[in-house]
Length: 502
Image 1 (cartoon, helix red, strand yellow):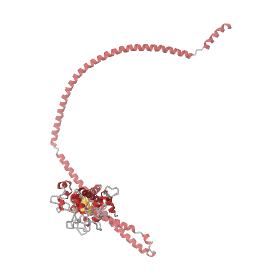
Image 2 (image 1 turned 90 degrees about the horizontal axis):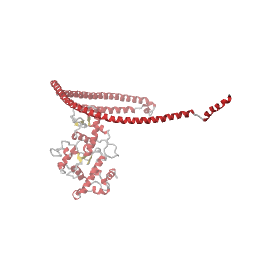
Image 3 (image 1 turned 45 degrees about the vertical axis):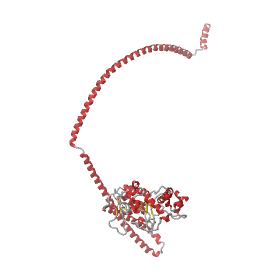
């Protein structure tokens, strides 16, 4: 079982029980069994989108091609056909071991492209605004992809009558590429944000200028998330996808301008690109882009020469030879190293000179931007100052002073009225204060009498407490004297013995 077959069977809509119906010619069910037909169409839509977002198609992550055996679309071989040398056939690519190729693939693609607008034909997309071959006069690719226009036209739109995926002569799928519009807009926004951040980071005029080679090499180094699967950590931009994105940016989003060289040689496919508000690319811009391209070429040459110099190793080379050949071989190696060193030095000098020129160009543009900004600022100041008439300023000041004086008079008049009202209120307040004081005196008189009686009672109580305190103090002193019976008896004995002594 191939990897693609395993992937197909991993899609829930392609479970084993439904494979027979999905790989059969179920076009008749459009009338006989509309629900079954709708389920099958939705399943194929899901599968094709999953194959795109999972990077299963060999040459693109936003589109698929019917076949690459007959590359008839304009541009490079990768533009309409496959990116690689191997032939690709969509019907064979989708085949599985048990049921083979899908029998209804042509009508399925036609339904998804013409009626449901899930995929956009590359042959229509690449024509851009000049798409009169595909739609009626007055309509464009924008009308084709606009939901409002879909509602207006309905399923049987003008486009559906003029474009078909099926070749009327052979009944097979036309050789064309079909772009998943939703995936295109998603990747477009992600890569466009990378470009805008780079331009903003450098902040120079030259950072807005590219050619298709330098821009593609820059974007190839940037990894973005291609789908919602956790297994896919990053996405590398493929050549055909870059060409589609560039066309989408320049025509349908108008975020950049592209210009082809005036004289195109057989091998020159250079496209000049400018991201600057859709401004035209001038000859000076082309000169700057060529300087940037030459700097890249010189840097690549410097890297190559440095690598060749690093490969020269006298010791390891001589040790593989007889001693008799050392002198001759060493001389050759030294001459080679000298030539490479001289070439590298010249290349480095050229790189520095070109880089200095580019720096000066950016400085010159910055000077012009500053001059232009100063010029605009001067005009703004002039316009602002012109709005003010100096002759009116004195009159305006007089008017202001008069209005201030008038306001003061009004304020003074209002203040006097308030003073008179305050005086009346003060008289009333005096009477109120008098009455209030009389009440205080009466209340205070009664309170003072009560306090006098209370004070007398309190003093009497304190007197009794003082008498008790005096008695207590006397008892304490007597206790301190410690009068005992022995002390009283001794003087008595002395008095009894005195007469005996005589």
